[in-house]
Length: 218
Image (cartoon, rainbow, N blue to C red; front, top):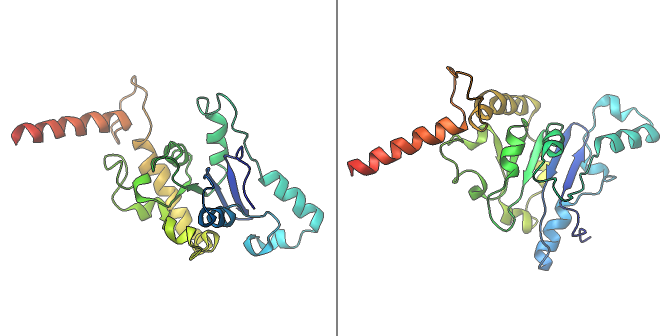
């Protein structure tokens, strides 16, 4: 099934496991198969993760639950500039899918991170190699890496990999994102004094100064 070009937001959903992701262009049969794996059918029971309480609900109630959980956002003019609705959506999900587009980097990496969402990275250049000042070298603390070639070749199942991440591990990762990572990704109020951490601006300026000092010494 080929996704509609206007569908820039794809959701992978299942009870206690939720994933939200981005767009991908369909060019070859190989990439079409890749997209089909990512565009999961809501009624596919194999991909639904339900708690015991939800499993006991009747079909009507389950359908209503799914409809409330599914909140696709139409990408309209201005929504990327006014991203409050996107940030609000990210906060409702445990995993945020970050496939590369025209370039490896994605604005959504930061929007998802400051929302407390665990990143699902397919290309290391999306986050790991680009921002050494703001993101820690141990990427397992805040993200799950799945090689995009393995996904395209249908060698792995994204949902199965994410389902193997225990609830304890998810909680640990999200706690790290909120308390350790998030302060480094936002701009602090210039009127406030930060004693416990540096905001994104301070980190950038301080590291630039150190970089210049190093270059001058050489």
